[in-house]
Image (cartoon, rainbow, N blue to C red):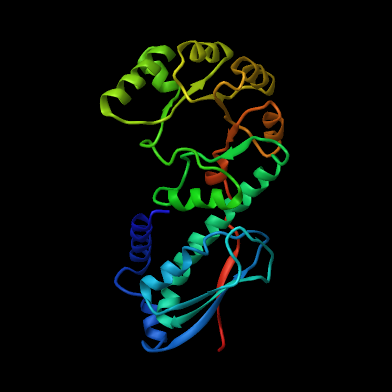
Length: 282
């Protein structure tokens, strides 16, 4: 993750929460009081976000000490302790909700990704995320996908040419969209991969006939048509299945021989993992 962007995100998250002051903590806790807390696991899943938590604490107390017990990617169970943190109590209290919001969501995404990835064991197909992310949290959510065993698709609109149905329709067809994309890349001096969405086997044939693409997305294909498409393409370029693929159907699609399967639910239909930050005695 980019340090500058992550620091900006953390500063904004803390500013949003603290505003002009944590008046409850200020009223109850002396400014010079120090204490210790632990990150307690309350639900089974995959731990994610331990690399981000110290940055949040240090933003409020540069001298805070964080002792990691479990690394990201660990399968955790209720009662496990992920880390201990010691520092100014006011800083610990102010950081608590931001740390939990980040780690609970990241751990939920990592857990969901692990369950999907486990369905692909023994196959070459890899699980991809999408741009269906929480505004402002994309880098964290995509990091959680990696921790869970998935692979990142493009980060945004800027790092890949992905020609989808609306681009094709507005451009006047598949061939026109691909050719315009190549002219654009040449004119702007950019070197970006090109992926094109296919809505039918006829689209697949048209994409292949036009050429010059790196990946074909088979959007909302049935497993039978996916298998036919893979046969037509013949592994000459990468293939990606997308559209409504669930935990129950992902193995069937993978067995068709596609290289990737993208699942938006990894980041936008997830349940955060239950974690808590609890004060402890020295």
